[in-house]
Image (cartoon, rainbow, N blue to C red; front, side, top):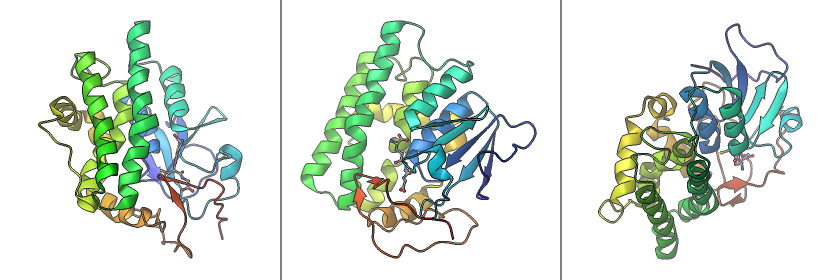
Length: 266
Ligand SMILES: N[C@@H](CCC(=O)N[C@@H](CS)C(=O)NCC(=O)O)C(=O)O
């Protein structure tokens, strides 16, 4: 459903007929993948522009002062930050609803992905950055995988959302899709016997057509994150566009580069 391009179309450039919005993304970005999953679940047709984050155009900072993807442009307005983009898309495109209609269930769906965002993601990037099975960092990631396992047991449904995947599942999934890559780089593996509930969820999620539509070639992941973790990311992996080399290694803070890093397009 996405028209994917590396051509740097500006926010004000017209959309091709039949498309409903434009999103700025980067092929390997898990945060952008969150928004792509919601768009795919809702069957929205959109223009997906991949930004080379080593060569950001000046106007990119006008639509997101942090200089990060994802950014959604819809009806002339810009929305940024993955969770805010996803919430916006959930509201702007009402079907199918990806949250429970029961307030308490909905609150708990948010608690699930909030935990993963606050604790799981930083643990994920710390281990990736280490590049080997550092015992403390491995335990930290396992601790949060274990919490997700417990949360899914508490939910007592096949998915965090219920009997079908929903908002919470799609907010958590991108990092679980990257765990095999983490395995190739660090040797990490989720212990299936210790965490059977989350292991079964991962297997179920892989069968979801929305996940299939948005999945990223795992070989590209290894190439991308192998460079990313050393502070020399190449954001054009998977694209036809010419690769822009990184002159100096950049500080890679828990997976979030210093957003002040401003590369002007030449
Ligand atoms: N908190 C942001 C994080 C987004 C983020 O870190 N995106 C990365 C790509 S995966 C980015 O755009 N980084 C900018 C850069 O590396 O210059 C969100 O949830 O959207």
